[in-house]
Image (cartoon, rainbow, N blue to C red; front, side):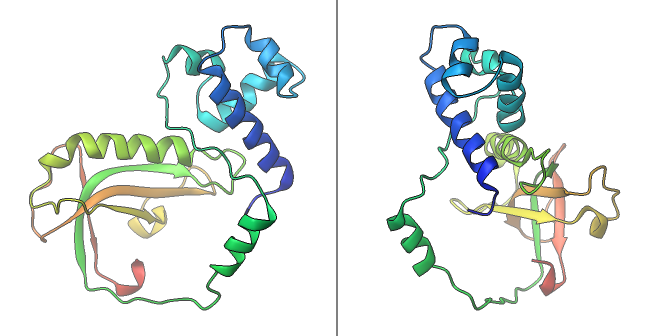
Length: 192
């Protein structure tokens, strides 16, 4: 699963609690106890760390609610399926230089305790999809999510696990960049 057992269990409990919270009319404290949290505060902290909003904001819809994807249940069948589809030989593809225009932001990777990638990336895709028609010569049905090292782009990290992300369309080089969007040109075949 790519994460510790404790983190996996906590994410499953939060996902189930968030699902129930959309229809739940009781007190948040009771829900916290139902999902094995010691207090309202510990539940709220874990919920906010996972979904970037409090349980109350989630229930009221005042936060940016993302589509909730339940963490996968581990069964022998899906572990076998996962194992059978793993390719252990790396595939290296060389690409021609390309230009991309889209919405950019930075996130903290999923491997960090302070991870905010799910919230930030979904927010970037929401903004990108709302503004895609502003991008010149974008290809219908084709979009790219590009993750970059900030330092490669001459920027300073504020966190060890910070990464730059661009939700984008591939465009012709020299295309005009709409206000508030970014243009990234990938020249080096090894950079993507």
